[in-house]
Length: 111
Image 1 (tube, rainbow, N blue to C red):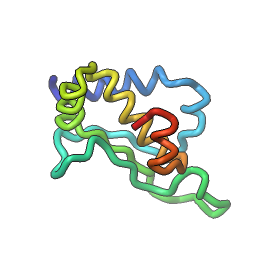
Image 2: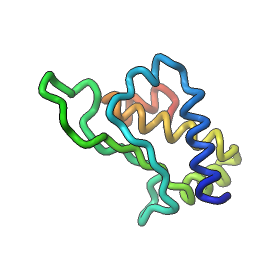
Image 3: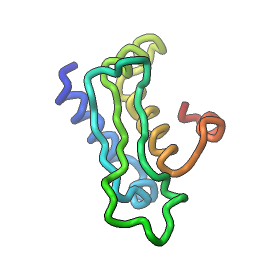
Image 4: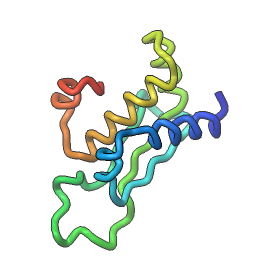
């Protein structure tokens, strides 16, 4: 799959997330990179939503990065669609944005 096609799929999945989740997403950028230098499917970098205080302003956007090649490989290994794997990874990283740790994300089924 071409990178721009993958990004369009990410954008479509994001646009179809429940509105109550999207309303919580403030000052965040979602990007796609071809490949990670390691094994990550995605990552979140920033100040989690629940840790933002009254002085949280004038800061660069938080960032979610999805890694195309690793997601495609994981989908293939798990015998699921790329779309389904993108959704799981995106929800996982949004969970980190919301302040959830790995244990909580496992409990929610987005691991």
